[in-house]
Image (cartoon, rainbow, N blue to C red; front, side, top):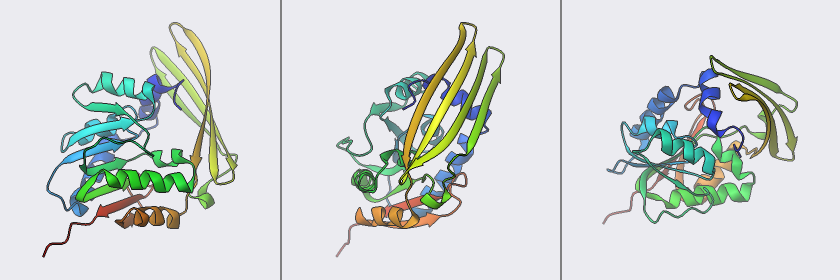
Length: 240
């Protein structure tokens, strides 16, 4: 997915002002408000280059998981103390459970279809202990997606110049994002293209996926960065 841009991903979002520490602190507040289990093991699914995972490792015993090998390579180099592994959110099986599972920065959209959304939520819920919670930051809903919107991001460092331009289109309930990169370094100027496909799910479809996975679900409209947040709680086992 990020085959062309993985090594510049962090520089691009830093230039755009993404505040990972502030988002991690907000995530921690949601976790502490809703988690019922006693442990502190956290799995960050679709962890990318590991910045959220690293910020959350101040408070929890964190592991990361991602499908993109190049993103994982960046994460492992930057944060060698954190365990990162490769896997698809649809069907990964770590054979152990966690108190918290997170899937942030709208990565859930990469499942693309409603059936795969259900599979991903069910699989992440399966990795929770009783009383554990699942945090999912959604992608756009169908009625929020603006076809034809053009956006530009720039990086202007002494030895690195990047222009990233994107344009959004749509195929049914899948959003298509075409990224065009112009990357300048001392070695030369490189052009690159990526296309990302992400599912557009309604609020009710998210709620339905959480409930089908056996989770109680709470929605916060603001979330970590204005995208909203779905919080699934795995019920504690009943005691006699």
